[in-house]
Length: 70
Image 1 (cartoon, helix red, strand yellow):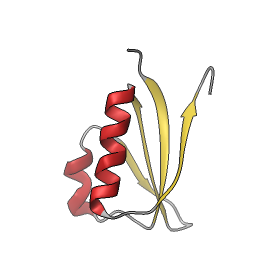
Image 2 (cartoon, one colour):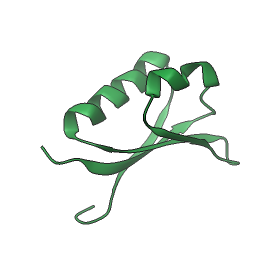
Image 3 (cartoon, rainbow, N blue to C red):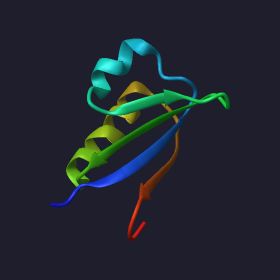
Image 4 (cartoon, rainbow, N blue to C red):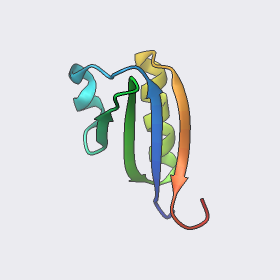
């Protein structure tokens, strides 16, 4: 299955102790108090990242597919 680039916004700043859990993904904190996670992911990997966000207890704001067909 092809990977697409997804940008995931979550409420609050993800504590750096969780960065290893999201290894290989670009993680940025915004001035607006959000954490942005971005990476090229296939559907299985996307669902795994979303499950991790749920497991950590973070509030999901949005998931956006970038590029063609988004």
